[in-house]
Amino acid sequence: MSEMTPIISFKNFSFQYNAQKRPTLKDINLDIYPGEKILICGASGSGKSTLGNCINGLIPFSYNGKIEGSLTVDGIETKNSSIFELSTRVGTVLQDPDGQFVGLTVGEDIAFALENDCIEQGRMIELTDHAAMQVGIEKHMKKAPYDLSGGQKQRVSMAGVLVDDVKILLFDEPLANLDPATGKGAIELIEKLKKETNTTVVIIEHRIEDALWENVDRILLMADGCIVADKKPQDMLRSPLLNEYGIREPLYLTALKYASADINKVEHIDNIRQLNLEKEEVNSVRDWYLSQQRQQTVNDNNYILETQDLSFAYDGKEYVLNDINVKIRKGEMLSIVGRNGAGKSTFCKLVCGFEKPQKGKVFFKGKDVTDTTIRHRAAHIGYVMQNPNQMISQIQIFDEVAMGIANIGLSKEEIQERVYETLKVCGLYEFRNWPISALSFGQKKRVTIASILVMGPEVIILDEPTAGQDLRHYTEIMEFLKDLNKQGITVIIVTHDMHLMLEYTSRAIVFSNGQMVDDKAGSAVLCDPELVEKAALKETSLFNLATMCGIDDPVSFVDCFIDCDRREREHE
Image (tube, rainbow, N blue to C red; front, side, top):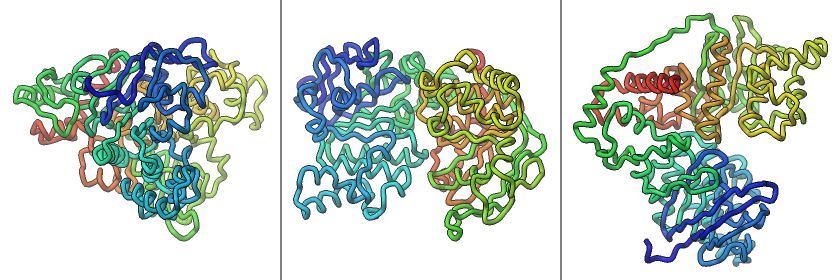
C-alpha cells in the first residue's frame, strides 16, 4: 500500500467549529488508499462524523470552522475546493435517507446528479437504470421514495451517489434505522458494490459486529478528536481497545473470553462466518457452558394488558394488522421485534388509542378500553417516541415535564412536587431549571420519559429507545428503564436491537406481515433460523458459536451467556 498514492490523506489536520472552544479533530494523520474498505468507530462525541464531513466537503463548506493542516481527496486540497467538486468524487449515504431525497419518484431522485450535470436524456435514463439495477431497486422506479421501506430508501440513496461514478463511498451509520436482516443486506450490498466498482469505502458505524458481517481492511478507533488506533480487524479485536473506549465487541468474542479461550490462537476472529476454533478452544467453551448455573425467574402477576383479535387497516380495507392476541403481565419488560413495516408501531398506536381498530378489543387490567379516549388511556399507558425532538414542545425542562399534568386540577405546589420527584427518578433534578436545548440527545430522551412518567402510567411503551446510541448511552438508558421496571412499571420496547432484546427483556413478541408469528424468550427467537428469516431478524453470533462447538442446546447456551454477562455488568 505504501507505494500507492493515497486517495484520502490527512496531514497534521485539525478542525475547530466556530461555535466550539476546543478543536473537534486534533492532529489527524491518516492515509486511505484506492480500493480500501475502512471502518471508523468511536463513542458519541469522538469526532468520527466530523472526520467524515471533512472527507465529503460538508466541512468547511456547510459547517464553518477553523482548519489547520492538510486534507487531500483524490489529489484535491479540500479547503481550496468546493462542495460541488468534492461531490463528484465522494458519494455520501446519510444515516437518515429521508434527508437526501429531492425527487418525487425513485427514478427522479437517482437521476438528480445527472440533471445537474446536464447529461443528455437518453444517456441519463441509461445511467439511472444501471445504478438502480446495481442496488436492486429497479422495480420501484415510479414510486415515491418516502413510500419505501427503510432498506429500500437506503438503496435509493446508494444509487443516487453511484450514478455519478464516484471514487469514494462514505456511509454514516448505515445500520441505524434498519431491521437486522436489512442491515445485514446493506453490509452485503456495500461489499458487492466495492467489488464491482473497486470503489474506496469508508463506513462510520459503532455496531462493530454487524459491520464486520463482511470483511474490512482496517478499523480506525477514534476518541476525543484523535485516532487512537488504526489496526487490522483481527489485531483490533484481540486488543483491549474496544472495551477501553466504550465500543461493544462482538458477542461471540465476549463469550470466548468468558470461557477463558486463548483468542490469540483463534484464526479469523473478526468474522463469525470464518471463525476457526482449535479443539482446545472448543473444549474451553463447552466446559464453561457446562459449569454455568442458570438463573430463572417467573412472573405470575395478573395480566395488565391484553388484546383480542386486534385488526386494523389505515384505509379501512387492506389490513396491516390481523387478529393480534397478546397478553402482558404486570411488571414485565418485553420486546416487540420484526421487520420494518411488520405492524409493530401500528400495534402500539392501537394499544395507546391513537388509532381505533376495525376489529378486536384492548383490555387494561381486565377492563375493555377499546372505545376510551387517548387522554383516558394516557393516564395508564405512556408512549415514548424514538426521536425526542418530535415530542418536545417547551423550552424549559420543568415546563415540558409539567405539561401533561397542567390541567388535571392540581395546585401549583402539587405540580411542582410531582415534577421534581419525577426528575429525581430520571436523574434530571439538577437540570430542572435548564433549557432543553442545553441537553444531550440521551438527556432529551430522559426528559420525554419523565414527561410520561409524571402522569403515573403503569405501562410505558418505548420506540427504539437506544437507536443511534453508543455503548455508554445505551447502557445508561437501559439501566434506567430496568430500574423503572423494578419499581413495578411494565416496560414494552419496540426495537431492532437484538442484543437489547437478549440482554434486558424476558420475552419477545415477533411480528411479520401484520401478524404475530411468535411469542417466546429472545434467546429462543434468535436460535430459530426459520423464524429469523420470516421476521427479518438476524441469528445471534452466540448461536453460531454454540453450533461450532457442538452444543446441542444453543438456546440454553445463549441464556447462560446473558446471565453471565449480566452478573459481570453488575459487578462493575
